[in-house]
Length: 77
Image (tube, rainbow, N blue to C red; front, side):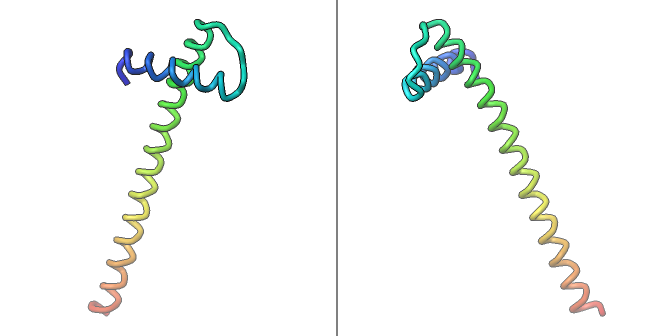
């Protein structure tokens, strides 16, 4: 995420989170917590997407292996 986009998203997220949780913080703290939250959220979501990709690859490999074993049992034996 580019730095400017990270700052904008972080400021917005920090502002919204402080309003949702009804916490009164000064502006620099709100911005800092929002930017740090955006960084953490980005890392966590990228990790989850990576794990989902690995899981999808495993499911595809399993289905391919099942198909090949079925074809082998059907036509070779």
